[in-house]
Length: 432
Image 1 (cartoon, rainbow, N blue to C red):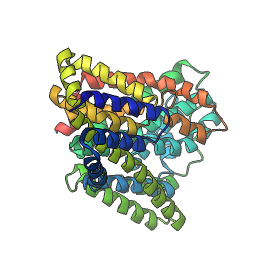
Image 2 (image 1 turned 90 degrees about the horizontal axis):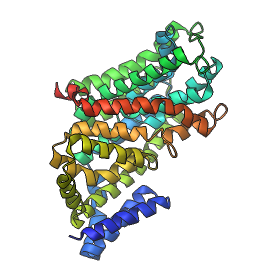
Image 3 (image 1 turned 60 degrees about the vertical axis):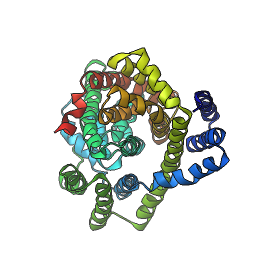
Image 4 (image 1 turned 30 degrees about the vertical axis):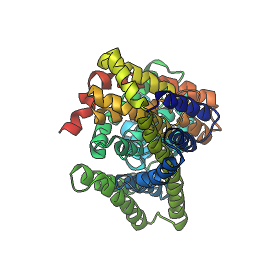
């Protein structure tokens, strides 16, 4: 063991990330060089050749491409197009009804996407122009969609939760169940923000109710029912114990293709685009994951993980002290790194600490995803903010989107505090 070499490697990793070296490449380079330094070239080459295969060949991880394919097929076939109109009808008499419809639309889309970026981009294209036409302040409209998109990583099937479950060796289904309550709680907290703004800030949200006269009820029913059938098929079977998360992904992907074909919405061009986007996303995720697996081995060999574990135990921070440190770490990291990179860089260090401290890893997985999603709307590199800026370029500047998203960061902090103070909010469904 060589703790000094381990910390030196961590420093080099941070420098490479600051130089904008891709996260997966940086992890692999640092891990390979560190193992070479500790054990020699031959063991380093052996680990480099074996680890990527061992990671990517995981049966559980095969759920990632399947759920991604399900989401992309649903998007490119237009199965999600009726969500916003359906939500508008449900919220038309509530203050801030269009904003609430956008949040509920994001929540519905989350059940087939697993990605906050996809959620924000899809609903942003539909909802922002309509809110601006209704008199909403453009920056607040964009902020609603940037924040609402984060629900996409909390409501199953969450790709972040699947990867976390693989690394933490926990039940993905139980992490999914914990994510349902937090996703719903997040959507409720965002909705309360919109209602309060609608009531007290007429300069931001006017009194105009959501216009629904143009919506064809029968056509809307035809639009929404296929998506509901897909959601019931996947999650009814998953949470009913009929199949595992991996099998649910395969059934969801096949179900999306069949349903979209039967209703006549899946073109060859759309299917090809869904396949290509699935392959591209998986390639990026798996490279980062393989690098993180190598990094985990290196930290174990160097003794850094054990050193940090004993140091934290010696400090006797207690539950709330430890959680305060964790929240601060992830909020700061989330400002500069995308969620997968932030998660996979830190898990090799933090998981041994949590296991020693008796922290429930299912609960922590949900908290971790929530913390990472806060980083998606915080400056300077909130990815959802950049996505919303790109889809609403005619209405807002980048600074405007960040200003609009600030309304919802306070709601996120309240939700995180509730999760820490009352863990049963997360664990209620997994414990059933």
